[in-house]
Image (cartoon, rainbow, N blue to C red):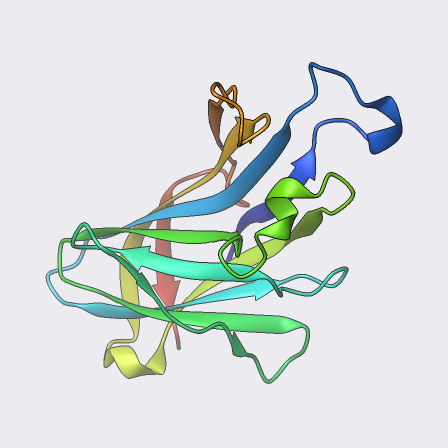
Length: 179
């Protein structure tokens, strides 16, 4: 079932030729709050599609217990899709994050000529590993970003932004079925 669009960024607010003291870079990630409304654990598959560019230089993380746990984005049998599988305990809520990989690409933060822009859409499914044919899940997508100036300056001018993304069907309750 289609969830929403997403946009992952590490990019200057303005093109380099329009450099201004007001211009800063932004790191933006995709956040998806998932609540399992069922009295049983469920295994979910999040499927991401991004054509230009493909989903590289990003990190998927899941936080159910207060600790971010990474996992792989696995190529789907239908390119250019990639899949992230997660287990959500009964009646529990988790936060999925898809963020730029600035740990392995720190030059994205400092080189004003470099940027990362990845856009696409997200789908969600009940995995066959769930042992259940259907599940009710609350799904709330968001974009969150951090704006920053010179990271070596005493005041790097940090600001944050977060905004909800509408779901494809306009609601948060998803009744998922694999039958």
